[in-house]
Structures are given as C-alpha cells and as structure tokens.
Length: 203
Image (cartoon, rainbow, N blue to C red; front, side, top):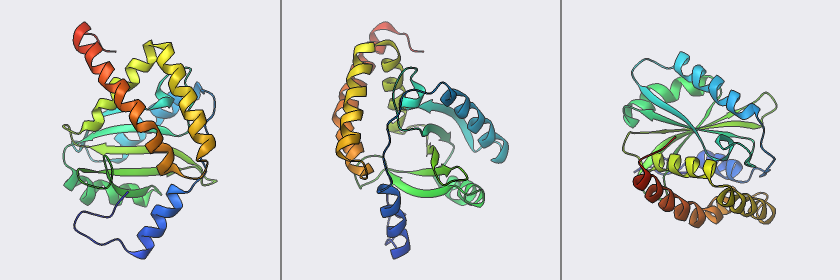
C-alpha cells in the first residue's frame, strides 16, 4: 500500500496502512454464499457509480474458485476507464459509503499503482476488496490463475496447503502472507497462460 505517487505519507496514512496490514488472517473452508456476495456487490457498484467510468467487473481470487479455502473476503477486479477519473470521482463516492481507500502498487512498492478499497460489515470485519485497474493492468492475469485452479484439482490442493501453512505462520502479517504466495501464483499463472494459449479455451 502507498500514498499517491510523488507524495509523502502522512502519519495518519501510515497508521491506516499498519492497521490494515496487521489485521488477523483467517483461512476458512469454501462458502457457496461467496458467489452471491460477489453478484450483490457487482450490482451495487454499477448502481452507485456513474455510467461509463467502470466496465468489466470480475470475481477473482480464492473465493471465486468452488471448493477452495480462502480468507472470507470477496476479491473483485474492476476495469476503469481512467485511474485519474477514479481518484477524482469514484473515490469520494465510495468513501462516503464507508469504503476505505488506498493507492496501492501492483507489485512491491513501485509503480504501477491502482485504486484499492476495503469494504466492511457492521461489525468491522472485511467483506470485500475492490481492485480498480485500467484495461492494460497486469492484474488481469489473475483471471488465468482463477480459471486454472477451477479445472486442476491437484493445483488447487497445493495452493490450499500453502495458504493454510502461511496463515499459521503469519496470522497477523498480511504483507508476509501475501509475499509467501507470490512465487506459487506467478508459476501457476505462467502455466495457465501457456495452457489457455495452446487450447484456445478459457472459461
């Protein structure tokens, strides 16, 4: 997570990052309600945001894979026409509805950045992560990873074991938990892109 490029992080912003990064990690069995939660949030975003600013809305990550254990947070990838417009128009709308906003790097701490939102329920638990990116963002490769897990149970099983191990090792360190998955996700994504380019088929 980061401040806007070229700007210094305020103490308050650093505290927000520290608090969000240190929240407890809980990996739970697959919940069939996750698909419905995605659809409800997709419809909500389309209803509250101006026409033309958002395009594709995809459910990705482990909650999008039937049978996969996951942190009980729905990851949603949203294509936006422009990140500049997102900061000017979408951020104020979603913040007014209680979403937390971060300007976040795709990888590491350096550009490119994207708009990331946390949505919580009435008790303060995270329910959704909204990732808003432009059409050429490399985050769209996460859909290859999602679709590959859906059709290869052995890969799904290996990922499930990795997630459970990392959640046990880093129960309050979301940064370390995420970094621990990076090598596996990169490898599977590469395999998935080769697989789908060869077959010409993707869900």
